[in-house]
Amino acid sequence: MTTPTKNARAEARRKEREEQRRAEVKRQRLIYGGIGAAVVVLAVVIAAVSVGETDDRVSLSEVAGDVEVDGDTLPPIPDGAADPAVGQPAPLLSGADFGGTPITVGDGAQLVSFVASWCPACDAELPLVVDWLDAGGPPEDVQFVMVSTNHDDSRQNWPPQDWFAAAGYTGDVLVDDVASSAFRAYGLTATPSWVVISDDGEVLFRASGMIDPAEFDTLAELAAAG
Amino acid sequence: MIAVAERTFGLLALLAIVVALATIVALVRRRVPDWLRDDVALPLAAAIAATATGGSLLLSEVAGYLPCTLCWYQRIAMYPLVVILAVAAVRGDGDVWRTVLPLTGIGSAIAVWHIAIENNPAWGGPCEDAAPCTIIWVEEFGFLTLPTMALVAFVTISVLSLAARRP
Image 1 (cartoon, chains in turn cyan, orange):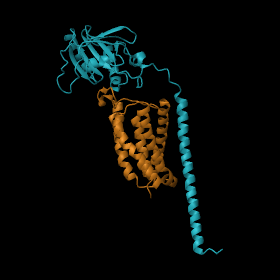
Image 2 (cartoon, one colour):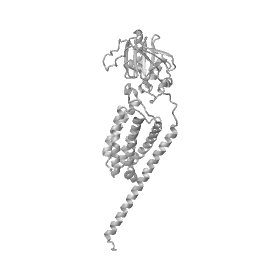
Image 3 (tube, chains in turn purple, green):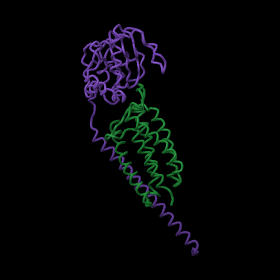
Image 4 (cartoon, helix red, strand yellow):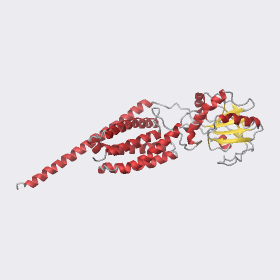
């Protein structure tokens, strides 16, 4: 056995220190990783306890209605061009509200608003509509109807009847079916959408998007005059 | 299960806000602890990016929440951060903030606009049936929506990558 040289001893000490440093880094990483994993597990446990069971949701099939469509489907609303549906016969929609009371759209002077409860724009507009109705709403010879459409039980503000009630809307609602047949029959692609129908069942106006509340009266007068 | 996942992401986002604030204080006071700079900042930033990525995929592919256009733009900014930060954490690359900040800056700007139109639905136009950007799929603790959580993740990753800079 030979006696180690001074350099060899220094090299051995350096290697030993390096191994100790690596072991310390490994230990620290394990500690930090363990803390991170513990935090995530704790978050999951707190979440599971705080959320609880939510299996009592009303299903889509329980909410969606049956709608009978009579008439030709209207063309889509064009961007910035004249609406080709104006002057065409409005499809006749026969269905019911959430309580089963029959509702018809397309057979008289009507102002119709197609809405989806999950749609934030509809959610913003509904209180404005309620305020307008509370302030007098349309003339007596014009019926205001909302069509609850594009139902989706995975989205916010479900079920829609609770959404209408929470906003204080107690007027007529036609409940669209699972396939959104009423919505599609009127050539619509987005909510909210507005349709004005004349007394003899012709389309006078269609628009998608929120409407200035000041225009509600104008549209109702259009239906009355048509 | 999805409700539990959403609440978990909400809790982790709250924790991330605390981490971000504490790190910002350390950066402003120029007193970033060695353990944070050398050992924790980059792995934690990588873990946040991975959680955000995994969470977004869980909510779209399992829960069925359709991502809107702005969600996709935020994903484009977030997903590469998982790889970039994981590699930087392994290498101990204190200069990775130069790559991270442009991505988190873009992602944060998009998230801020997304939050703005969530709160002002009229700005987002009418709701297409598929995936309007105004729709609020998740809302935890009254303010943590998905773009809000994304913003928290982008900001926290930003400050952690700055905290990992070598003096």
